[in-house]
Every structure is written in structure tokens, then in C-alpha cells.
Length: 401
Image (cartoon, rainbow, N blue to C red; front, side, top):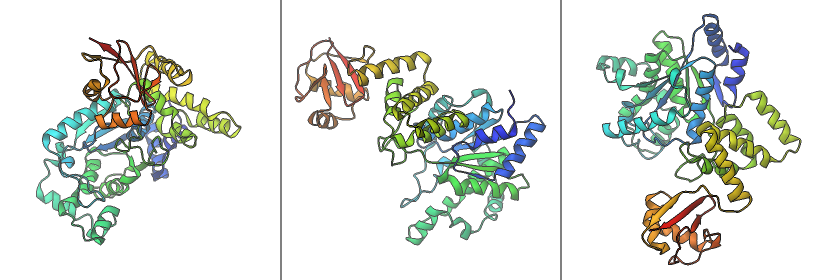
């Protein structure tokens, strides 16, 4: 059923940090509805960190919600801009990627984004298609549309300039190239995190200069990780990966602080705003946050896994973390040795632990159990079918050859 413009606005605005500007967005939606057209939503991805977690997925979920309203998305893989590197607030710009790295990372991105986006309403483009063909006189024209003073308004450029940290002239072209992507695609809406404010607003400016209608700039907030404080990040270990097994994903969502329940409903799910308002009221009336978080865990896990996998994740959680029993459906590893220490290379190879030192630290902290008994000795002798529990979430069954 076609949604009214008012209903579309309600869904689009859910969880959004800022829209520039709402009146223009309303006009675009009204015209699209009147003419039975779809808006073009743009998202640029610089293929430098292709492992997507729920923090990255915030903008993708918003695009999916707009696709469900009948609009189309264009994902711009920055294979050309990725060779230059988006300037950062660090001592120097990001290291430029090789052609091989760009293509490998781009392929990984494409595999992951379709866990979220509607493949029939998504076009994937590489900005080398047009940026690689621009002549130098066009580059000069683009450069003439902005002053150095305006470019230095960008926080990272400003900080580096004040601290006498070198800025390459080529770095000034990154925001211009991202803006030119919007011109090429005639984007109606561009999404990004709040850290992309400067680049996305430049797209509005350049479209206007080129005689186009300016895109709507839509900024999504940063999603905090499991610690409830820091931005979700793989390096900080506070992330929930979209490719993680269902049982791990379910348990991790259960670990978020109660204060983030509503934010996760808004940014990490497609639940309707009216339903989220009802959940807020339930919390205000004293409903146990743990029960609401359990529903949240089911909803988020179901976005990335099958119904059967979600069912098994719930059973796993009930057994392993409610009843403290050992689940039946756990991964197995084979070993020719029955000495625990000899298993370490296999555990590292299977990404169960990162290193021997990490494993020794976990044992010292009481974080490793064999058949639910706390382990203190790395030279412990295992038996066939022993179950090792590592940390709070990982179970491994050992098969001795």
C-alpha cells in the first residue's frame, strides 16, 4: 500500500540526527507521489574498511526503510576516491589504496550490503566511471566553486592547519569529488554519518552551481557499542557484526545497556515509530528492560539470519546463559593431541582466540572452563567430546582423533 507523504516523513525521520532541509524533502516526496516517481538516494562507501557492523548498518537500514516506501538507492563505491583517501583529523591523510585493495574491499562491501538493502531497488556504481574521465579544465572549474577559506572550515583541515600539520592540495579534492558524485547521479537525498557533514553539504552546493535541484542532506547519529560509551568499533571490541553467528549476535544485543534500548530500536531495526513510542511507554511504566531487550535481540538477529537460526539462537541463549547448561548445537574442532596447549593454533586459526597470550590471560582470569569446570592449567589433558567454554559466549567441542 502506498504511504502518504506524512507517513513517509514519519518513517524517514525516525532516529535521524538532522535533515537539511525538511521542507525541501517534503516537496520532493509530494512531487514523487504526484508523478508516481521514485527518489534517488545516494550513499558513498570508501572501500577501506569492508567489515560491516551494526554501527555501519545504521545508514543502510535507513535506506532500506526508504526503499520499502518505493524509492531507489545508488551505492557509490569510491574506487577512485579511495585511491586518494578521505582526509582525517590525524597527522596525515589516509593512506591511498591500491587498485587491488580497492576492488577486493569493494567486492566484500557488495556482498554485505545486500544483507540489508533490496537488491531490486539498489544500483551499485563505481565513481571511477565518471571521475576517471574528467579533463583537467573540468577539474579547474570544480576547484573554482569553493574557496580555500571555506575548505578550511572542515574541522580536520582546520585542526591540521592550526597545528602546522601538512595538508596536501590533493586532499582538498576529496570533498569536491564526493560532491561531483551527487551531480553525476542527480541525487535527491544523500545519507551519511554526522562525520560526513562537510562533504554531503558540499554536494548540495555543487548541484546548485551545476543547475540541479539540491539534494537533501540526511545525517544519522553515531551508534554506541556494547560498552554504551564509545562509538561502535571493531578495534574497541564493542561491536556487533552483521556476519556474526546468530547465537553470538543475540547474546551481544542482550548485553547493551538499558539506556540504549530505544536508540537501538530506532537505529538498528525497521520497527515503526509508533511501535517504538509504545515501547518507550512500557519502559516508563516499569516493564522489565530485560524483557524488552529480549524482543530487541530477536528482531535484530532476524534481520540477518533465518527463522531457524533465530530459534536456535534463543535456545542457545536459554541453555547457556539462563540455565547455565551446555548447548547441544556448538562448533566442533578436531585435534590429534589431547593437550589443551596444543589446541591453541587451531583456536587461533578458527578465530576463536586471537593469540596464545590472550588465551593464557583468559585462563588466569578464570574465563576458560572445561565441561563447566574452571580451568587453571594450560597443559590440561582433554578427553574426546570435552566442551571448552571461552569467555561468556564461545563454546567449542573437542574431538580427539
